[in-house]
Image (cartoon, rainbow, N blue to C red):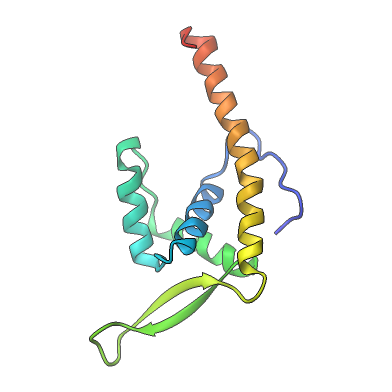
Length: 127
């Protein structure tokens, strides 16, 4: 993960957006792949956003490669052999890296929000 996050151009990228939510869901201890997908789809349904399976897992893999998250396999409750892969903060530094990423992305989201507000003001006269 880079030290300083530079603006990504027009608006925040989808994967950065998903990674933000994955970090927050890990903080809330609700993170395993398919459950995460279901929750995000439900949360963003009113906005017409439906993240797909591959983008969720690409974002998760990015966070693992960046040393933010790690996988933990646990036996599924009531099952002898079936395992579920959960995600948690990696080692001693994972949670600190996650907090840093969230701070950096907050700056980027504020920039994007300002751009959208300007577009609405300039093109629709709404203040």
